[in-house]
Length: 445
Ligand code: NDP
Figure 1 (cartoon, rainbow, N blue to C red):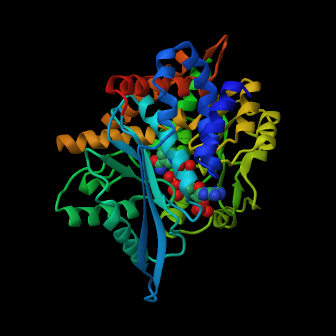
Figure 2 (cartoon, rainbow, N blue to C red):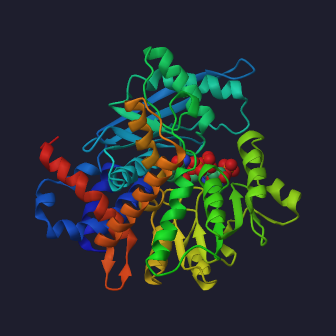
Figure 3 (cartoon, rainbow, N blue to C red):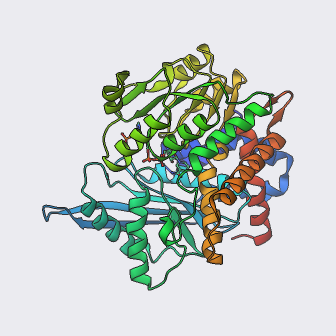
């Protein structure tokens, strides 16, 4: 490791002990940025990177709620307000039993760079709870969301901090959270994004992350005179991002051959077409069932407890969770001919896996760039809420495509290494510059 990165990371580790995911996210950025900062000493003197790695504010709170048996349950609630140099804090809420401070700080840190890359005026934040919506009734989820918002409402606002969804937080949860905020504040504002279309949501917001990750893969391929058409695509996850990535790949003429959940993956060599995707959407979003049921319905293979990276594919779209592609899996993907990885999830590739991708010079789109479509349309939802005017589907999709093109262009600009585009470096530096300049202009705050 570069000794300057080592020295920087020693400080981060000492100040944030035991936060492995946070260290991992900071180190990946520091490796790209420290050489760049050395060439631009104004950022070094103002300690911009050191400041970006320290949240502006962390809120932690108790979330008590009554389950259907009348028993009290207690969860932890969090909101990390990471950086507001270029706009109000913006980033999702995650409800998953694995949620802790380290995971939310890594996500909030990534969000700062991602939001900057979108070119929209949004700072970075993230929050959530160790609450597990799986197996809970709608009423339990509602009571939990109401209790969560009863504390969170005092820390957020349309000009302060605007949360959205993430793992375990979809349209249902956003609805309950919004309802409680409105009741507490007696205000109808765009305080959350990912809202239902009837009460201030944006068209294309549910689709945006999955569509965006697919557009980004297409941009990377087009830069080499190729495209998604005719390609075999392995996708992990079967939630919001995975579903709409599948839809867009199909629309662009590719074939999706895998989907997964935390139980295992299904392999459908004939392709998950629109009809099968509708079955998955009903299974996951309404019945809240397991992906295994797909294998039973369509008579395809189900691999219990496995991830899809052993399957031969041209493109991999990891759309489930962090650290879901390790070094061996990265090597297997490449051995089997995979040439493109576009990260729909946040930090799905381990540092060792990223090294394999970069050493093999494949087209690797890191999450900060590739999955920025979701927060981009959230930004567009904020604009529509401020104007009190909804845009049509076509208008939003056009803007999303343009933003993904711009992000790709920024990555090319800052990530060029001879003939190769190092999109990791491009996204890190490209995301950094705007935030750093804003922080310089605002003084030591
Ligand atoms: P969902 O909750 O809709 O879906 C998550 C999917 O990933 C499910 O299939 C889930 O399986 C699977 N999964 C979750 N945790 C694990 C795990 N520990 N191991 C294996 N599988 C797991 O979430 P989203 O689709 O919204 O989010 C997916 C990823 O995309 C996350 O990394 C998120 O941060 C990122 N992202 C999401 C954005 C958005 O707009 N929603 C924006 C940008 C990034 P199971 O049902 O079994 O839990």
